[in-house]
Amino acid sequence: MSRSISEVSVPTTELVTPADLSTLLQGAIIDDNDPFALLCCSGARQMAEDLLGYYLTPRDFVQYADRFPIFAYPSAALGPLYGVQVPQGTGPITSYPAGFASVRNPFDIALLANPVQSVAKITYKDLSGATQELDVDTDFTADLSAKPARVSPLPNAGWPVALPGPQSVRIYFTAGFAADPNAIQAAQGTHDARVVGYPQKLKLLVLQLAGHWWITRDITDVPQGITNAIISCRLEDFNPSME
Image (cartoon, rainbow, N blue to C red; front, side, top):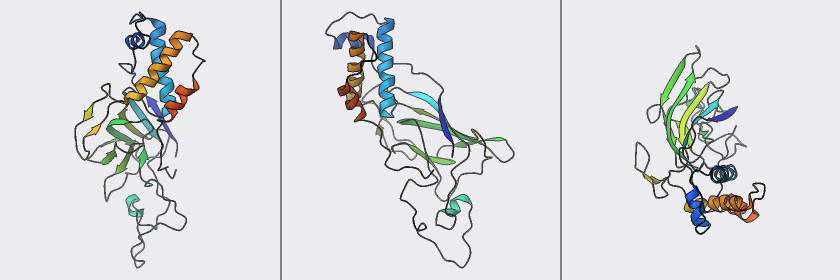
């Protein structure tokens, strides 16, 4: 299944600022609007995001797919989630076919930008080509604590039938760590309260990289120690998708 994602808003704040650089460099006077200092701060954050698989500042995204997931094993117990009828007289089937790997539920859709703060809606084109809208907790569920976050059909339900085609399915959501490292998102819907602020060690690493670039004036020089420390915090997907 073809998937893609677009960033549809830009960060309103940066994880590190020229003032942070001044503190790091022990009192060096750096103007808040210094163009190179601002580039060092944003560039270091962007490089860390590329290495991590996490977004360090919140912004909005749209994820596209050409259809909803299709379950490849219609005779298994989860087949009815896709409107597949199990033949009468065969009895209940409670396991997957031989050779089926233990992976993410085949009807889940993993979100490609993390950590996810909220999912606004999903839209899709029905078989007539008309755009339909699905609401979270009413038409589908969103597991924001998963790594990566995922959306799934409601229990004992399935995804609707979408007209296959480029960007037929669109998922609208916000991803990125909150600007306050101690931010806690209150319980809502089916979700418990959870910490959503950025890990402070990541801010320190981004600040170290931005400060290094400010001093050397050479953005091609990236200390391996900083790179390794950032990579050690990267997002790991232990439940790969079937598709």
